Image (cartoon, rainbow, N blue to C red; front, side, top):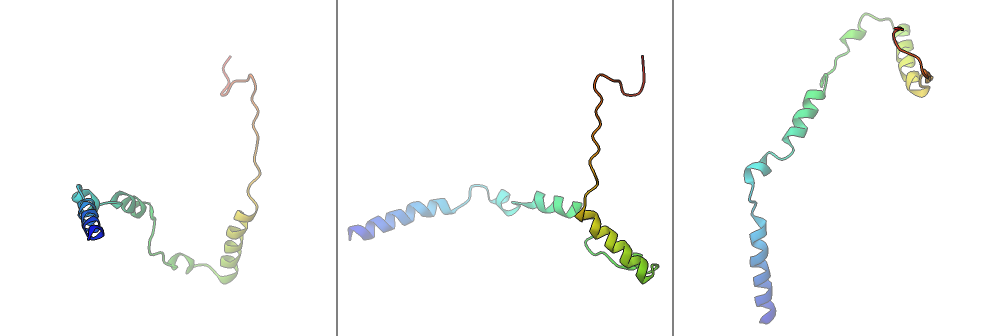
Length: 90
């Protein structure tokens, strides 16, 4: 009997935590992230209309150059300008 009362009391206490004090906020939770992601999506339904004027060989070479551009990055150019001025001057 004592266990039943303890379980009922614990259930009543936990039921108070189940209700939200900010229901309006909770219904819109994550809306800003979804909206920002939607605004950053350039073209959610891209088409292949831009490829219609290219022949197969040119399109294949362009696609190959695009893929290769990620394999070998451009070399880094170090610019050392110690004690010099940019843009001329005295």
